[in-house]
Length: 320
Image (cartoon, rainbow, N blue to C red; front, side, top):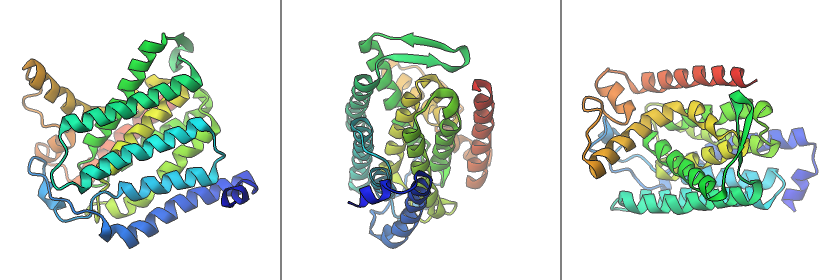
């Protein structure tokens, strides 16, 4: 009934109410319920990792649920979008269970869970949209065999989940970069053909992230944990797929790819092939710039954000 009331309103008013509700509910519930979240134990391997010890962790549980609620309340339902929202919540829950666990889950366990969810995203996308991709700058469309497309889409989602998760190590960094990435897709929508429903979903997610950032600016009062970062990474990948211009994920999320992705490559090469790279570079890169270059947390967030915004502006202008 409540959904029907909202959908009967003027679309502009309803959209405005949805964004306000997403932001307001996130602020209110994090303020009132933040103390109920599990506490962080600190990280020995991260720069200043001990400073997070004792802070509430897993705030993603709150703002991802609010995102899902506002999507279902302020947007008309269809099966494809509903599946993506459910999978975003599923990614959040896998992360939140890890946040709550006294003994952190192993890398392989989390990687397999991420893979299962990534496959489900890929299958859902192919089922509803086919396997045709566009290359924005060349105005070219390519149809890929379903199996190959499925593998590539699965890889995209898995990588996005994990690089976003690895970026979450400085107060405000991951949520700020995610907001910039999603807004980049939002402002490029007219060129890429991103549907209005998915475009509006990006605004609802950003509104929730802004509500969370109110409490996460240095020095943070709480942290999103894997509950937030894994769900954000999945949603970024879904948004990239929905544009039909999947390669835009690279420039629109390049700082997260470099920050979190280099560490994944470094560890994988060393563990499986015994190849050692970036010997003098700490990963994630946000640890390198803080430890080796002396950047403060605030400088790290601002400088990473500035670089990402500059790249996004250039790409949005080019694809016009």
